[in-house]
Amino acid sequence: MKTPKYILPIIVISQFCCTSLWFATNGVMNAVIKEYHLEATAIGYLTSAVQFGFIIGTLLFALFTISDRFSPSKVFFISAICAALFNYCFVLKTSELPYLLIFRFLTGFFLAGIYPVGMKIATDYYDKGLGKSLGYLVGALVLGTALPHLIKDLFVTTSWRFVITTTSVLSISGGLLLILFVKDGPFRKKSNSFDLSIISSVFKQPKFKQASFGYFGHMWELYTFWALVPVLLVSYNQLYANLNIDISLLSFVIIGIGSISCIFTGYISNKIGVKKTAFIFLTGSFTCCLIAPFAFLLENQTAFISYLMIWSFLVIGDSPMFSTLVANNANAKNKGTALTIVNSIGYAITIISILIFTKLSLAFQSNFIYMLLGIGPLLGIIALKKRA
Image (cartoon, rainbow, N blue to C red; front, side, top):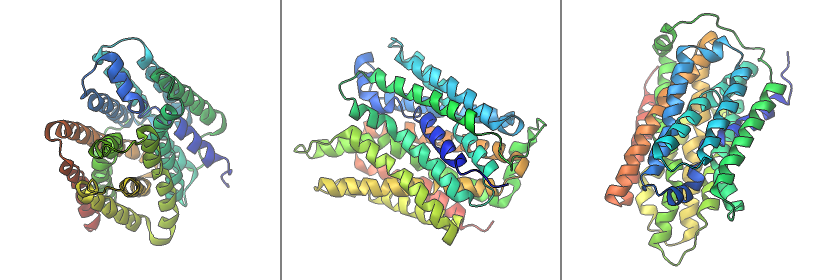
């Protein structure tokens, strides 16, 4: 049975709409901090709250094998609606940080039913050329993540609540689009049992373990880099006072260029191999981490922004490759659970990384701290080099 051509575009569009919730508050964080009189560290806590919610969500989804036992399309739809509602709660007039953290936590919790489940739906439709399909899917995640920055820039005179409301509406639209047009895929193998041993058993496969550890190293860097993009731009702007950088627009462009990278690696992986592609991009982003403090010495604004765009291109290109390696080395019946548990661990690492770098940036005021982002890619490179 040939997969209809419209399936992948709809999954991609739905993923894009729903994942716009992820960094919705980051795009308007300065306005939120000012209006609610929050401390500067709030950006780290609120970003980590989403990640923590995602981790708990993916952990529970994996424990109960949700996407393997139930229709992935229905799981995606319900999660999209719930995530949109809790994201919208952020606009309620409350300046209490604990409530804001709870809303972001619950948004992240239901994102667990969107991102990894979207990948599961793709694997149920595309048995061959999975790397290319997941390249488009992760590319949608990247654009969705960057979108709040663009909305803020385009509607600069409107309230920050408009950005939050818009992303909630997009999430509901994405959920509806998927449930209406994408049914369960032909390669889906339903699991009817609840088996806690699945979580530990998946890591007994050497190639699966290798791919997972490479992904974990990649995740140490990825989301922290995305969270730091506006910070990097502000720091550079302050260093050279004669500049007037459009932080929101450039944040969107820099993060958003990663979507092109994901599509690019999806295609080249068909020629040079998935694992080799992941290794090349992981090595490239590691190099960018090492030269980060020296990039601030570039007095040419175009050169500095170009460097950040190259870093952004390299930091995400290996993500669909790792997801492909994980999916290809997992049992067909447990593929959804395997993808979910690996995502859970990976995003747990992002919380640690984001909080560490938020504290370091406030404590040391030194650009050399960004070199420490290279720890993750380095460990990922070592994992990929080991024989499986």
